[in-house]
Every structure is written in structure tokens, then in C-alpha cells.
Length: 561
Image 1 (cartoon, rainbow, N blue to C red):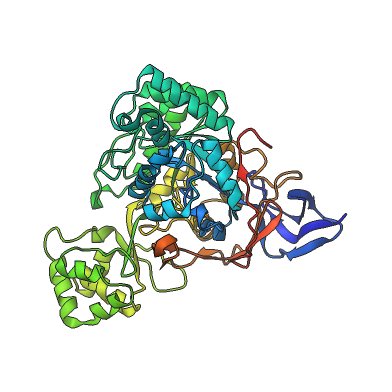
Image 2 (cartoon, one colour; image 1 turned 180 degrees about the vertical axis):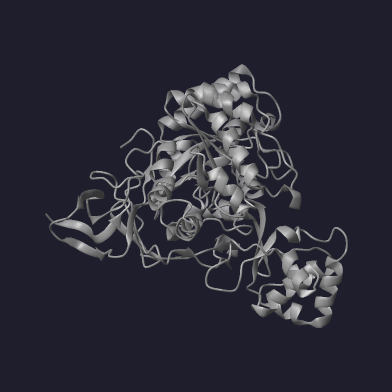
């Protein structure tokens, strides 16, 4: 038998949690056609000796809803082994939407998710009103990664209630209309419904987005309809009581975002240096999560490493004031020259020393290094480095920026500030690592490389996860949460989404700022090393870390094979 692709001599890690085995893998007509000792030839043969062969990774927290319109390669997730992305998280979607409301939805996506409004308005076709039509529009694009979508509460509520959607309770008729729209969206291919109860997520006029203050009974009614169609309910900012109410009404799968610095038994902790969790905090949070879930099908998702803000001359500056504002007004070419001037540097330091001038806490800010790969695990903060050098922290920031020609980046760990605490949290079977937010906060963070960090840190360097377990956490586990039944496992007949990985080399590379969004808007990107090949629906999408130009991703619709 001839095959389209044969991957020879690799270590097969099938995604189920079973121990790896040596063998070949063959692909024919978009499906896995054989495993083990494969006879026959492939039109393409890939030598996988000393490599692991895994299912493609499933990223269940992205905001690539807009970026697909102008970046069908869906970078950077496609560089890190992701073959399926779940969009429509956090209540934020572009459908349903009347033509006159497009600017409002684009503006909310900008203020909540840091995706430039003008890029959204100019980079998408906007040839839809209802959610199924939005999926049709995406399908015309052709993408490098499979897309599964949810319909968002903010869009649905505004579509039904207009301006009243921001703060008013819905009438019984309005709840019925919203529920019908959500049901239609699932019938047209959405995998679920997302909601957002995080009050700091605001519309351009400063109001919390629609749905933030919706009555729990509204969510329960929608959840019952979603669960009746075996759909997924996703939430951000919901406390444990709300999550219980949603799960009990849905009697289906519920997914929510969990951060130790914000959530611990549903309570809010004070941000700042004192809020860095310890191992006991992680254990307690894992126990609280397990108690919340009980017999309910609730899954949490959390960051795999410190996250919150990326600082450096490339984009965001750590202080404010006249001199800092003038520095911010310069482009990347002008900023290194400016800080090389002794008088300017002195003025910047003087301003940074003033009370209230700092935009970050230096004890939570960490230099990512100047090497090929970023240092995400260092324990010496910017404050520690400054103290060791006998400098003010702003002097250390400027010195490292000068030494690297303006390329120095600093990771402000607002979330997942302690890897030890995250490890204890990850001990819960109800928790999946991820929360990369790909496509969102594009000039503020760069967490889309989380699968590479899972392999390099949580498996190879620390051994926290076994190889079988770390792959299961990124493949069959999240696929089940979405409801996908033909991906996430290496088995005959399954969709041929496959990675070939050099485990000894895999790593994230240093983030860098580019201006490749519509209108030249900036975003951080991050490439990877160690990914020999990624196959999406049986076609080679990435080879030796570079996109092939093949865009064989599919819009995956609920209820279809």
C-alpha cells in the first residue's frame, strides 16, 4: 500500500497517556492510515529517528478570531505544534452582529483583548450577521490550523438588548431570544458558549462589557440549552458559585480560567509582591478546584509560566513622566540612541525615582536574557539585579537595554509568579496548562509558545510531567474538553494532525516585535526550535520550524464528522 506520508522510526507518543512505543506512522487522504511497522512507501518520507511523534496540540484558549483574516498561517501558534485552536473565548466574538454594530464589537475586542480596532475592521470580510455565517466566512480564508469556535455572550446580549445589554437585567423574552440565538449558533457549528464576568474588561466608553453583570439565572437558562446539545460553556471571571450554577444547569462540560494571584476559592487576592503564591497556595487552590468539580465536568486552565506584561524598548516602558513619555514617542530606531545620551538617561532615572512613576513592581519583573532562548525561570528579579549592581532598578533597565542594542525584554509576572505554586496546582487532574491567549494582547504579552515551554521545562528540564502525561495534557485532554472525537490521539482512522519533534532541542525563541498587522500595527511574535514537522489534516504545514505555505486547516463544526 502506498501512503501520502510515512513517518519512519520515531517514538510514538499517542496522546492517550499510554507509554511511548517505537514505530512508524502513515497518512493517507487526511487520516492516519497505519501505525507500527508500516509497509509500502510514502510520497513523502520523514525520518523520525531520535524524534518523538505526537498528535497535534489543541490550544483551548486563543483569540485568533480576528487575526485569521490577515494571517492565515496563524502564527505563532502554528510554529509551536498547535494544529487546532479554540476561538471565541471570554464572551468576545464578532457574531452575531448587525452591520451598524461592527465598530462597537471591534472596539470592545480592542479594549478587552488589545487587538487593534482598525486592523479588525479592515482585515476581516464582515460578510456575516449570524454565527454560522461567520464560520462560513472563515472557511473561505483557508488557514494553517484547524479552528473550533464558540459564540460569545457580549455579542449575543448586545444583538438582543442593544444599549441595555451593558448593565440591565434581561427580560424573560430577551433571555428566550438569546437562548434561541445560542442554540442556532451551535446548530450551525459552534462548539459552545462563552461568558465574561471580569469587570475590568471594558468597552471603549469604560463600561464593563455586556454580560458582566448578567443574572445567574440568565446563564443557567443558556447553559441548559448548550448542555442539551452537548456543548461547552466557557467562562472568565466567574466565581465558584457561578461556575457551580452553570455546570449544574448545563450537565455538560465547563471550562474556566484560573490564576492563583486572582482566584483562590473564588476570592480576590491583592496584587503586588505579597501576592506571589507559594507551594501551599498552589496545593490549596488545587484542592479547592477538585472540591468544586466533584462529579461535575469542570476544567480549569492556567498559565504555564510567569505572564502579564512584556517590557522593553521594543514596546512597553516601565515608568512614566515627561522624559519617559518622550522616549515612548520615538520608534525602535530612536530609543537606543536616546538612552545612550547621558543627560537623557540621567533624567529618565530621576523621574523613575519619584513616587508613583513606576508602572511595574521591579520585584516582579524579570530579565529574559540576551541568548537565543528567553529565560522564563530566573529567580533574580529586576530589583534583585539592581541591588546587586548598586543601582536603581531603572538604571539596570537602561543599562541592559543599552548592552543589547534595545533588544532586552523583561517579563512582568503578574500571573504564575511562582513555578513551584503552579506545579502544585498542576497536580489536579481538573487543570490543563495553557492560557496562551494567542491573538490577544498582541503588543503586551507573548505566551503563545506555551506548548514548547511545556516540553522544555515541565518535561525535559524538571521531569514534573512524564512524556506520556505532558503530551496527553496538550492533545487528547483538551480535545475532549472541546468535544472533538477525531483528534488528539494517534490511531488509525483519526484525523492526521501530527507533530515530529526533536525533544532535546525544543524551545521557545526570544520574542520580538514586528509590525505586520493591517496598518502596520505592532505585535510580538515568537518562533520555536525543535519542530521538525507539523502535519495538519494529512498535509505538511511546517518543516524545520518554517511554514510551508500549506493551509490545510479546517473549520471544525459541532455535529459534523
